[in-house]
Image 1 (tube, rainbow, N blue to C red):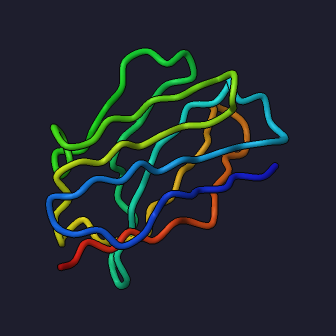
Image 2 (image 1 turned 120 degrees about the horizontal axis):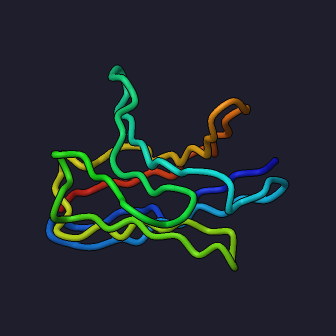
Length: 116
């Protein structure tokens, strides 16, 4: 199983980024996906989640209204569109594939830096 995040980078405050998370080696449509972020010295926190069927999505209060999660099962990819980014959004962003009763999978993360 391979999970690869991409799309991070340096962006100015107020800017936008779209992160991608591609997975292979698993039955993509069977897994729920959660995007997390982590700042050094702090615990990893969930940002957004999308269920396996692409139905009801959930967002953390910290980014609600500024982020949209989506998935394309035909491309085995999950996206995280982030708008109006703030310096406090600076973190490494990870995606996690999980399903009840089976192992979960993480990518290596992608760095997002919001700075002028």
